[in-house]
Amino acid sequence: MLYRFIGGVVLMSGIFSAFGLSASAGLNAYIPLLIIAITAKVSTVTGWHLMSLSKPWDTLESWWIIGLLVVLSAVEFFADKIPAVNHINDAVQTFVRPAAGAVAFAASANVVNDIHPVLSLAAGLLIAGTVHTAKAGAMRPAVTAVSAGTATPVVSLVEDVVSTLVSILAVVVPMVIGVLLFIFLLWFVVWLYRRPARQRRAAA
Image 1 (cartoon, one colour):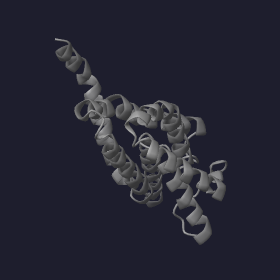
Image 2 (image 1 turned 30 degrees about the vertical axis):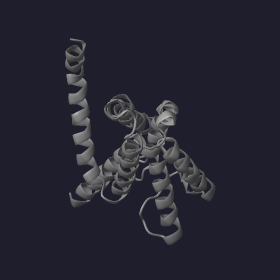
Image 3 (image 1 turned 90 degrees about the vertical axis):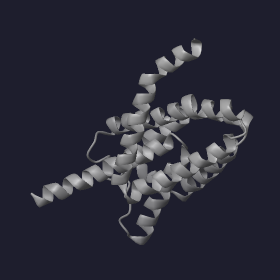
Image 4 (image 1 turned 135 degrees about the vertical axis):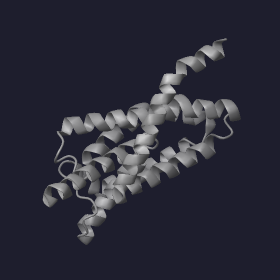
């Protein structure tokens, strides 16, 4: 009985971790992948069981991949801070962030072994895509309209910080991520439900 309970906790922790990492990919495609790669690399080098990656996701541990993720993170960091460029960046990231979320979900420890890889990829794609849609389709336009684009760098920096913190928490304290993700999804459902009413009031 105790063994089954511990196994269930480990499985749920792995699922929450995967959800958190894929959700943070919806804000920044490369930060969660970089944190996964570094955590797995540290685990391999030191022997600490922080995160273990199954094939083919263990490719993320390569120094070449880690270096590439550092460069891509830097490129997105600066591109997303420039008011004119950030719209182009968001358009490109419409495809990149869901894909990164799919990889982050599937690569997360304890998940790929218990869930079919195709289902893992689909779940990560859906989660990251939802977060990206909320960001690019709702929050960013509202901020741009209110501040005439002057608040874009600040909001982008906040998103990067949130993505980093969520990714770290997803590895260290995955249960917290489960609660935060539930709150966000609840807010998003309410926002979608109330959107037609807001549009009708705006039209009137």
